[in-house]
Length: 361
View 1: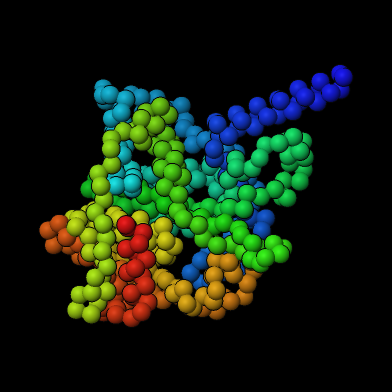
View 2: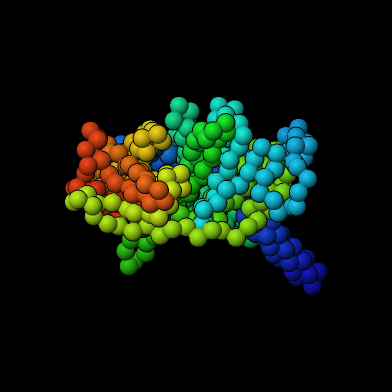
Protein backbone atom coordinates (compact mmCIF):
# COMPACT_ATOMS: atom_id res chain seq x y z
CA UNK A 1 0.00 0.00 0.00
CA UNK A 2 2.84 2.35 0.85
CA UNK A 3 4.41 1.67 -2.55
CA UNK A 4 1.12 2.35 -4.34
CA UNK A 5 0.67 5.58 -2.40
CA UNK A 6 4.14 6.76 -3.30
CA UNK A 7 3.56 5.97 -6.98
CA UNK A 8 0.25 7.85 -6.91
CA UNK A 9 1.88 10.87 -5.31
CA UNK A 10 4.72 10.75 -7.83
CA UNK A 11 2.28 10.61 -10.74
CA UNK A 12 0.27 13.52 -9.31
CA UNK A 13 3.40 15.61 -8.83
CA UNK A 14 4.56 14.89 -12.35
CA UNK A 15 1.15 15.81 -13.71
CA UNK A 16 1.13 19.13 -11.84
CA UNK A 17 4.67 19.86 -12.98
CA UNK A 18 3.66 19.24 -16.59
CA UNK A 19 0.72 21.60 -16.27
CA UNK A 20 2.88 24.34 -14.84
CA UNK A 21 5.40 23.98 -17.67
CA UNK A 22 2.77 24.40 -20.36
CA UNK A 23 1.10 27.33 -18.61
CA UNK A 24 4.19 29.34 -17.78
CA UNK A 25 6.75 28.36 -20.42
CA UNK A 26 5.37 28.15 -23.93
CA UNK A 27 8.72 28.73 -25.62
CA UNK A 28 11.91 26.72 -25.10
CA UNK A 29 13.86 26.48 -28.35
CA UNK A 30 16.71 24.17 -29.13
CA UNK A 31 18.79 24.22 -32.28
CA UNK A 32 17.97 21.43 -34.74
CA UNK A 33 21.68 20.92 -35.25
CA UNK A 34 21.74 17.20 -34.53
CA UNK A 35 20.03 16.44 -37.84
CA UNK A 36 22.44 14.81 -40.38
CA UNK A 37 23.99 17.06 -43.03
CA UNK A 38 21.34 18.15 -45.54
CA UNK A 39 21.45 18.88 -49.23
CA UNK A 40 20.29 22.48 -49.54
CA UNK A 41 19.48 24.45 -52.71
CA UNK A 42 21.65 27.51 -53.29
CA UNK A 43 19.05 30.00 -52.01
CA UNK A 44 18.70 28.30 -48.63
CA UNK A 45 21.01 28.03 -45.66
CA UNK A 46 22.41 24.84 -44.12
CA UNK A 47 21.11 23.88 -40.69
CA UNK A 48 23.78 24.65 -38.12
CA UNK A 49 25.00 22.24 -35.47
CA UNK A 50 25.30 23.36 -31.88
CA UNK A 51 24.00 22.79 -28.38
CA UNK A 52 21.13 24.48 -26.61
CA UNK A 53 21.60 27.94 -25.17
CA UNK A 54 20.27 28.96 -21.81
CA UNK A 55 16.76 30.40 -22.12
CA UNK A 56 16.15 33.47 -19.99
CA UNK A 57 12.75 34.13 -21.57
CA UNK A 58 13.76 37.30 -23.36
CA UNK A 59 16.05 38.55 -20.63
CA UNK A 60 16.90 42.15 -19.98
CA UNK A 61 19.71 43.54 -17.85
CA UNK A 62 18.97 45.37 -14.61
CA UNK A 63 20.46 48.55 -16.07
CA UNK A 64 18.27 48.32 -19.17
CA UNK A 65 15.21 47.66 -17.03
CA UNK A 66 15.90 50.71 -14.87
CA UNK A 67 16.52 52.81 -17.99
CA UNK A 68 13.17 51.72 -19.39
CA UNK A 69 11.39 52.62 -16.17
CA UNK A 70 13.14 55.97 -15.88
CA UNK A 71 12.45 56.97 -19.47
CA UNK A 72 8.85 55.81 -19.58
CA UNK A 73 6.52 58.81 -19.71
CA UNK A 74 3.60 59.08 -17.31
CA UNK A 75 0.75 57.40 -19.20
CA UNK A 76 -1.78 54.55 -18.94
CA UNK A 77 -0.45 51.00 -18.87
CA UNK A 78 -1.92 50.27 -22.30
CA UNK A 79 0.03 53.04 -24.01
CA UNK A 80 1.97 52.08 -27.12
CA UNK A 81 5.21 53.97 -26.32
CA UNK A 82 7.77 53.27 -23.59
CA UNK A 83 10.98 55.27 -23.54
CA UNK A 84 12.33 55.22 -27.10
CA UNK A 85 10.42 52.05 -28.10
CA UNK A 86 6.96 52.03 -29.61
CA UNK A 87 4.68 49.45 -31.19
CA UNK A 88 3.12 50.00 -34.62
CA UNK A 89 0.49 47.85 -36.26
CA UNK A 90 -1.36 47.49 -39.55
CA UNK A 91 -4.10 44.88 -39.50
CA UNK A 92 -2.63 41.83 -37.78
CA UNK A 93 0.94 42.89 -38.53
CA UNK A 94 3.06 44.48 -35.83
CA UNK A 95 6.54 45.94 -35.77
CA UNK A 96 8.71 48.01 -33.47
CA UNK A 97 10.00 51.53 -33.98
CA UNK A 98 13.03 52.43 -31.85
CA UNK A 99 14.62 55.87 -31.68
CA UNK A 100 18.12 54.47 -32.15
CA UNK A 101 20.23 53.85 -35.25
CA UNK A 102 20.38 50.26 -36.64
CA UNK A 103 24.06 49.96 -35.73
CA UNK A 104 23.20 50.70 -32.08
CA UNK A 105 20.65 47.87 -32.03
CA UNK A 106 22.36 45.15 -34.05
CA UNK A 107 24.49 43.50 -31.34
CA UNK A 108 21.64 43.52 -28.82
CA UNK A 109 19.28 41.85 -31.29
CA UNK A 110 21.90 39.23 -32.18
CA UNK A 111 22.35 38.48 -28.47
CA UNK A 112 18.57 38.32 -28.09
CA UNK A 113 18.18 35.42 -30.53
CA UNK A 114 21.06 33.50 -28.97
CA UNK A 115 19.55 33.99 -25.51
CA UNK A 116 16.32 32.47 -26.83
CA UNK A 117 17.99 29.26 -28.03
CA UNK A 118 18.89 30.04 -31.65
CA UNK A 119 21.98 30.30 -33.81
CA UNK A 120 22.10 32.79 -36.67
CA UNK A 121 22.62 31.46 -40.18
CA UNK A 122 22.29 34.94 -41.72
CA UNK A 123 23.95 37.94 -40.08
CA UNK A 124 24.13 40.71 -42.69
CA UNK A 125 24.52 44.01 -40.93
CA UNK A 126 25.02 45.85 -44.24
CA UNK A 127 21.45 45.12 -45.40
CA UNK A 128 19.88 44.81 -41.95
CA UNK A 129 18.85 41.14 -42.08
CA UNK A 130 19.52 38.34 -39.62
CA UNK A 131 17.92 34.90 -39.70
CA UNK A 132 17.99 32.01 -37.25
CA UNK A 133 18.63 28.38 -37.98
CA UNK A 134 15.80 25.85 -37.84
CA UNK A 135 15.01 25.08 -34.21
CA UNK A 136 12.52 23.03 -32.23
CA UNK A 137 10.25 24.37 -29.51
CA UNK A 138 10.88 21.78 -26.77
CA UNK A 139 8.15 23.27 -24.59
CA UNK A 140 5.68 21.39 -26.82
CA UNK A 141 7.02 18.01 -25.69
CA UNK A 142 4.95 16.11 -23.10
CA UNK A 143 6.52 16.46 -19.67
CA UNK A 144 5.73 12.93 -18.46
CA UNK A 145 7.53 10.78 -15.88
CA UNK A 146 9.56 8.88 -18.47
CA UNK A 147 10.93 12.00 -20.09
CA UNK A 148 11.42 13.59 -16.69
CA UNK A 149 13.74 10.75 -15.66
CA UNK A 150 15.36 9.81 -18.96
CA UNK A 151 14.81 12.81 -21.21
CA UNK A 152 18.17 14.44 -20.56
CA UNK A 153 19.95 11.14 -21.25
CA UNK A 154 18.13 10.26 -24.48
CA UNK A 155 16.82 13.70 -25.48
CA UNK A 156 17.44 13.07 -29.16
CA UNK A 157 14.64 10.46 -29.36
CA UNK A 158 12.03 13.08 -28.48
CA UNK A 159 10.74 15.33 -31.22
CA UNK A 160 7.77 17.63 -31.68
CA UNK A 161 7.72 17.09 -35.43
CA UNK A 162 7.90 20.85 -35.97
CA UNK A 163 10.72 23.27 -36.76
CA UNK A 164 10.73 27.08 -36.74
CA UNK A 165 13.01 29.81 -37.96
CA UNK A 166 12.75 33.58 -37.65
CA UNK A 167 13.96 36.47 -39.77
CA UNK A 168 14.61 39.93 -38.33
CA UNK A 169 14.79 42.93 -40.63
CA UNK A 170 15.97 46.38 -39.57
CA UNK A 171 15.16 49.45 -41.65
CA UNK A 172 16.34 52.97 -40.97
CA UNK A 173 13.39 55.33 -40.60
CA UNK A 174 14.06 59.01 -39.95
CA UNK A 175 16.25 59.16 -36.85
CA UNK A 176 15.26 55.68 -35.72
CA UNK A 177 14.84 52.07 -36.81
CA UNK A 178 11.87 49.89 -37.74
CA UNK A 179 12.23 46.25 -36.61
CA UNK A 180 10.25 43.43 -38.23
CA UNK A 181 10.14 39.78 -37.10
CA UNK A 182 8.70 37.06 -39.33
CA UNK A 183 8.24 33.32 -38.81
CA UNK A 184 8.52 30.30 -41.10
CA UNK A 185 7.59 26.78 -40.02
CA UNK A 186 8.00 23.16 -41.09
CA UNK A 187 6.07 20.07 -40.02
CA UNK A 188 6.99 16.38 -40.31
CA UNK A 189 4.28 14.23 -41.92
CA UNK A 190 3.99 10.61 -43.03
CA UNK A 191 4.72 10.10 -46.72
CA UNK A 192 3.08 6.69 -47.18
CA UNK A 193 0.10 4.69 -45.93
CA UNK A 194 2.33 2.34 -43.92
CA UNK A 195 3.46 5.33 -41.85
CA UNK A 196 7.07 4.22 -41.83
CA UNK A 197 8.53 7.16 -43.74
CA UNK A 198 8.24 10.89 -43.15
CA UNK A 199 8.96 14.10 -45.02
CA UNK A 200 9.07 17.74 -43.97
CA UNK A 201 6.57 20.19 -45.42
CA UNK A 202 5.97 23.93 -44.90
CA UNK A 203 3.32 24.94 -42.40
CA UNK A 204 1.64 28.36 -42.14
CA UNK A 205 3.44 31.25 -40.49
CA UNK A 206 2.40 31.74 -36.87
CA UNK A 207 1.53 35.40 -36.08
CA UNK A 208 1.35 34.61 -32.35
CA UNK A 209 4.97 33.47 -32.34
CA UNK A 210 5.99 36.58 -34.27
CA UNK A 211 4.21 38.78 -31.75
CA UNK A 212 5.66 36.95 -28.76
CA UNK A 213 9.21 37.40 -29.99
CA UNK A 214 8.52 41.06 -30.77
CA UNK A 215 7.30 41.44 -27.18
CA UNK A 216 10.41 39.72 -25.80
CA UNK A 217 12.58 41.91 -27.99
CA UNK A 218 10.89 44.97 -26.47
CA UNK A 219 11.99 43.72 -23.06
CA UNK A 220 15.52 43.22 -24.33
CA UNK A 221 15.50 46.84 -25.50
CA UNK A 222 14.46 48.17 -22.09
CA UNK A 223 10.66 47.88 -21.81
CA UNK A 224 9.50 46.28 -18.52
CA UNK A 225 7.76 42.89 -18.82
CA UNK A 226 4.29 44.07 -17.75
CA UNK A 227 4.47 47.14 -19.95
CA UNK A 228 5.49 45.02 -22.94
CA UNK A 229 2.40 42.85 -22.47
CA UNK A 230 0.17 45.90 -22.19
CA UNK A 231 1.67 47.42 -25.32
CA UNK A 232 1.15 44.20 -27.26
CA UNK A 233 -2.51 44.06 -26.24
CA UNK A 234 -3.27 47.77 -26.64
CA UNK A 235 -5.54 49.10 -29.35
CA UNK A 236 -7.80 47.43 -31.88
CA UNK A 237 -6.00 46.75 -35.16
CA UNK A 238 -6.91 48.89 -38.12
CA UNK A 239 -8.19 46.79 -41.00
CA UNK A 240 -5.48 46.12 -43.57
CA UNK A 241 -6.45 46.72 -47.17
CA UNK A 242 -7.01 43.63 -49.27
CA UNK A 243 -4.48 42.88 -52.00
CA UNK A 244 -5.93 42.21 -55.46
CA UNK A 245 -4.13 40.61 -58.42
CA UNK A 246 -4.53 42.53 -61.67
CA UNK A 247 -2.91 42.80 -65.09
CA UNK A 248 -1.66 46.18 -66.22
CA UNK A 249 -0.38 46.34 -69.77
CA UNK A 250 0.38 42.62 -69.76
CA UNK A 251 2.34 42.88 -66.49
CA UNK A 252 0.96 40.93 -63.50
CA UNK A 253 0.61 43.20 -60.47
CA UNK A 254 -0.81 43.37 -56.95
CA UNK A 255 -2.95 46.42 -56.15
CA UNK A 256 -3.43 47.73 -52.61
CA UNK A 257 -5.36 50.81 -51.51
CA UNK A 258 -2.56 51.98 -49.22
CA UNK A 259 0.19 54.57 -49.18
CA UNK A 260 3.75 53.72 -50.15
CA UNK A 261 5.01 53.41 -46.56
CA UNK A 262 2.36 50.89 -45.59
CA UNK A 263 2.64 48.95 -48.86
CA UNK A 264 6.45 48.82 -48.57
CA UNK A 265 6.23 47.37 -45.07
CA UNK A 266 3.62 44.78 -46.03
CA UNK A 267 5.58 43.61 -49.06
CA UNK A 268 8.77 43.33 -46.99
CA UNK A 269 7.01 41.25 -44.34
CA UNK A 270 5.50 39.02 -47.04
CA UNK A 271 8.86 38.41 -48.72
CA UNK A 272 10.41 37.52 -45.35
CA UNK A 273 7.54 35.27 -44.33
CA UNK A 274 7.25 33.37 -47.62
CA UNK A 275 10.93 32.52 -47.84
CA UNK A 276 12.34 34.79 -50.53
CA UNK A 277 15.99 35.64 -50.04
CA UNK A 278 16.25 39.44 -49.94
CA UNK A 279 19.75 40.36 -51.08
CA UNK A 280 19.30 44.11 -50.96
CA UNK A 281 16.64 46.81 -51.04
CA UNK A 282 16.32 50.41 -52.18
CA UNK A 283 13.42 52.08 -50.42
CA UNK A 284 13.81 55.32 -52.38
CA UNK A 285 13.28 53.38 -55.61
CA UNK A 286 10.72 51.04 -54.03
CA UNK A 287 12.75 47.97 -54.98
CA UNK A 288 13.56 44.68 -53.23
CA UNK A 289 16.33 42.62 -54.83
CA UNK A 290 15.46 38.95 -54.27
CA UNK A 291 16.43 35.40 -55.13
CA UNK A 292 13.67 32.93 -55.93
CA UNK A 293 13.40 29.23 -56.83
CA UNK A 294 10.15 28.49 -58.69
CA UNK A 295 8.14 25.58 -57.22
CA UNK A 296 8.13 23.66 -60.51
CA UNK A 297 11.95 23.63 -60.52
CA UNK A 298 12.21 21.94 -57.14
CA UNK A 299 10.67 18.54 -57.84
CA UNK A 300 7.79 17.41 -55.59
CA UNK A 301 8.07 19.21 -52.29
CA UNK A 302 11.39 21.03 -52.16
CA UNK A 303 11.18 21.38 -48.38
CA UNK A 304 10.41 17.68 -48.12
CA UNK A 305 13.46 16.93 -50.26
CA UNK A 306 15.67 19.23 -48.21
CA UNK A 307 14.75 17.82 -44.83
CA UNK A 308 14.49 14.17 -45.98
CA UNK A 309 17.99 14.32 -47.48
CA UNK A 310 16.80 14.26 -51.12
CA UNK A 311 19.15 15.09 -53.94
CA UNK A 312 16.72 16.98 -56.19
CA UNK A 313 17.31 20.69 -56.25
CA UNK A 314 20.94 20.79 -55.19
CA UNK A 315 22.10 21.96 -58.63
CA UNK A 316 19.24 24.40 -59.24
CA UNK A 317 20.19 28.03 -59.54
CA UNK A 318 17.74 30.56 -58.13
CA UNK A 319 16.40 33.37 -60.27
CA UNK A 320 17.54 36.88 -59.41
CA UNK A 321 14.61 39.27 -59.63
CA UNK A 322 13.34 42.59 -58.35
CA UNK A 323 10.06 43.23 -56.58
CA UNK A 324 8.98 46.81 -57.10
CA UNK A 325 6.49 48.89 -55.11
CA UNK A 326 5.03 52.00 -56.77
CA UNK A 327 2.47 54.36 -55.29
CA UNK A 328 0.26 57.18 -56.41
CA UNK A 329 -1.65 58.87 -53.60
CA UNK A 330 -3.16 56.04 -51.54
CA UNK A 331 -2.96 53.33 -54.20
CA UNK A 332 0.11 51.10 -54.52
CA UNK A 333 1.06 48.44 -57.04
CA UNK A 334 3.56 45.61 -56.67
CA UNK A 335 5.19 44.03 -59.73
CA UNK A 336 8.11 41.78 -60.62
CA UNK A 337 11.09 42.94 -62.67
CA UNK A 338 13.88 40.93 -64.23
CA UNK A 339 17.40 41.12 -62.85
CA UNK A 340 18.09 43.83 -65.45
CA UNK A 341 15.08 45.87 -64.28
CA UNK A 342 12.66 45.18 -67.15
CA UNK A 343 8.99 44.26 -66.48
CA UNK A 344 8.63 40.49 -66.08
CA UNK A 345 5.57 38.92 -67.73
CA UNK A 346 6.66 35.28 -67.35
CA UNK A 347 4.78 32.51 -65.55
CA UNK A 348 7.25 32.86 -62.68
CA UNK A 349 6.28 36.51 -62.27
CA UNK A 350 2.59 35.53 -62.17
CA UNK A 351 3.31 32.96 -59.47
CA UNK A 352 5.31 35.42 -57.39
CA UNK A 353 2.56 38.04 -57.65
CA UNK A 354 0.02 35.45 -56.51
CA UNK A 355 2.20 34.38 -53.57
CA UNK A 356 2.49 38.02 -52.46
CA UNK A 357 -1.23 38.64 -52.83
CA UNK A 358 -2.19 35.45 -50.95
CA UNK A 359 0.00 36.35 -47.97
CA UNK A 360 -1.29 39.94 -47.87
CA UNK A 361 -4.97 38.97 -47.84
